[in-house]
Structure formats: structure tokens, C-alpha cells
Length: 308
Image 1 (cartoon, helix red, strand yellow):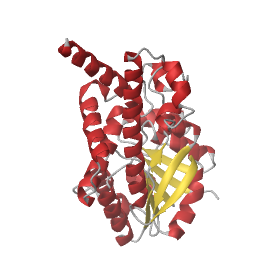
Image 2 (cartoon, rainbow, N blue to C red):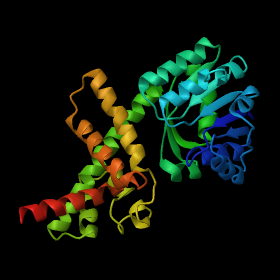
Image 3 (cartoon, rainbow, N blue to C red):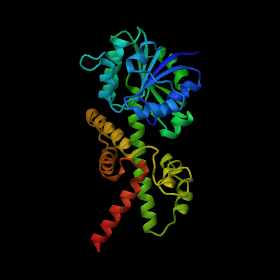
Image 4 (tube, rainbow, N blue to C red):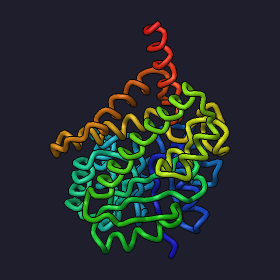
């Protein structure tokens, strides 16, 4: 079934995602505030609208991919005298937000859409730029069953695994929990490699053991933080993301907010948020998040020099 889809937010993830919708035969109109992002998406075959509201006006489905919750809510409601997306859309339009934002913001956006006579789902993604380009993203969807049924074939054009996590906001909840696991595990894997280096253990030997033993995890076997064992990992490209350190810091910040709001005593999740915030505030913002291993090496060297 061919649908008219407005795709707003054509960055490193959104551009390839919109291109996959075009390839699937949908009538796509894209838009981004960045002229460079529009040009890049246009080069991928995505038609570009003159403005966001123009893209939305004729759409059956509106997909947003924005940096933060405030951007989603502001886009939905408008700013000053400028009309918002909800006012510009036809009644009953399905809004799918694939941004990674706070659970409360996702629920607020959902409620605003429903109050304006539309349908809405949160559907954040995992899989990075490589997954966006290959159409193999994982989607974590939150919303009503009938809305998910409409969204499913659209998401399948962009992803390989789509999980309906429950009601409004629960897609974002799943994303926050997943990325807290990922951040903690990458720090642990990186610390283990640095310890192995200090003990004289080769990267290959440690990888061969841990990847086939109880230390096996995605951070090790897919996004290995040292070059060599996994040729496709960002470590082999001087830590070109991938999934940038700034994005991991953002996601772990959302996790830390959720931990504080729910009263969960999660020491590792909270510490991982602090570690990645420090990494992103330094040189790690634009590096892949696996580049945290370099920060660990540097701090280990300073500790060694202090001890001597």
C-alpha cells in the first residue's frame, strides 16, 4: 500500500531512513532546517518540500526525527505565530516520532496529537547510521494496537526488527533501558581491554576468549572498541561513528533522569551517564562511543604516572 509520508529531520539517520521509504514505493516529502541535510537527502532520492507544514499538509503519516523532546513538542504545536504540524495536518494523520526523547515528553507529544484529532506513536530506533542506510534498524514502538498495525509496514521499510512495547511512551522506555545496558557494557568491555593491555594480553586473545565465553555482548562482538578483531567496528576507522559519544551521553542522561524520577537505585547506569558526559564534553562528542577506551587509557596513564 502506497502512502503519502512526510519525513521531518533528515540528518545522518533520517536521510537514509527517508530514502528507504522512497525505495519501498511510498510518496515521501522530506524537510530539514539544514540546507546541507536537505541536499544530502535529495541526493539519495528524497523529494524535499519547501517547508515542514507543506510536507505535512498532504501526508497520511508524519515521521519526525529530532534532537530532543522540546523540538518535537515545539514542532507539533508551533512557535509564536507559526503554525505547528498538528494544525497543518489533515484529521486522523498518524504521527510517528522516531526521535530519542524522555518518556514524559513522548507522552506529552502523544496527548497533544490525540487532542488535535490525530493518532500518534513513539518509535525510537537502534542500529546507528549503518542500520539506517541498510534498512536494518530496530524500532521500539509505543502506542495503541490499531495505530501500530498501520505503522508496522512503514517501519518494516526502514528496519529489520520492530517490537511493540506497549502504550504511549513505552517505546522510549525500552530505548532508554537498552542504551543504559549498551553504555555500561561498552565501558566494561573497554576497561577489560585496557586491563588486558597492562597485563600483556593481546587484543585478539582477549577477544577470542570473551566472545566465546560469559563476557560475550554486542559491545564486544559487533562494536569492538579495539581495531582488528571485528573489521567493521568503528575502531578500525579511527572511531568515526557509528553512534557518536554525544548521542550516548544524551541517551544516558535520559536514563539518569528516568532513574531519578522512578527512584531506581542503579549505580552503574548513573555512573555510566557521568562517564559519557565527561567524554562528550571533552574530545569524544563526535567520536564513536566506543572511543571511550581512549579516555580510559589516558586516565590510566595519568594514574600510573601519579603513582610513580
